[in-house]
Length: 112
Image 1 (tube, one colour):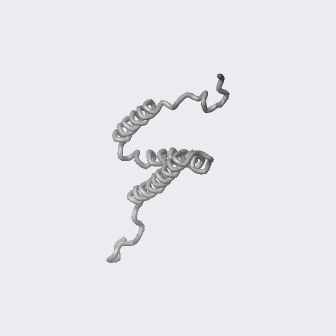
Image 2 (cartoon, one colour):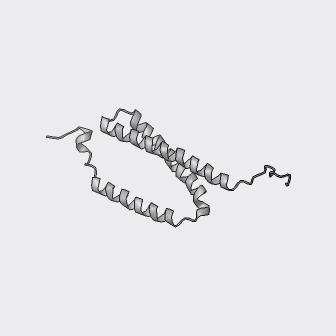
Image 3 (cartoon, rainbow, N blue to C red):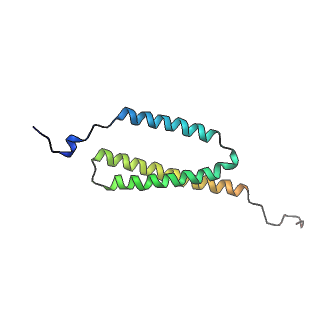
């Protein structure tokens, strides 16, 4: 008996391989970020925001598509995590940039 169903012909996902790649990427990412100079954190945050924007597009596609409910819930969680990362990244970047601004207000006591 020959199966013509496309789902029957697809190989099962290699979950342990995916978990290994995720853990390895997490450790490499943590090692790279720990070695970054404090002066480079603002550009690094901008790159992280760009990567999160790509993740948002993917999670919107997964959440809005006709997938099983478990996958759609994971897409919604990914959407929330990416949006949280982007918003907090912009807030931290704004706070860091305010530290470098000079104060142009006149001082009290009549001295410039």
